Length: 171
Image (cartoon, rainbow, N blue to C red):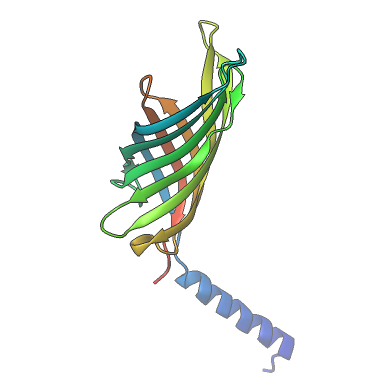
């Protein structure tokens, strides 16, 4: 039996690709939430009657749920540009620490949309996405992305809900 050179090359390429895929790290589902409590904040209030404000805040909390960030200490460095009753564009970084020297840096962006609640008053809906931008220790080489929802726990605290996939660096 003779095999043509192009067919042999294609077969070898397919075998090599399947070996690479077999050794690659697989994505782990992530579903965590953290009640974030303000520790520092600076606010710019627009004095034009619009209610527009920009809040820069550092909040802290602990992630609970399933996936690589379960149990991690989370610190938010956020900038919330909001026009109450209209819209807003919050964004920032989450710093997730789990054990000594294991830090994941997560960039997030949300679009705040106000929709009428049952009582007719505007209710904020904060929905967006997150992505891992870098990490150290066990999180070095970590990749990940997903959705982010922010909900009010009370007038000052916020619940950050992250769902998505994370892929640890292959060893």
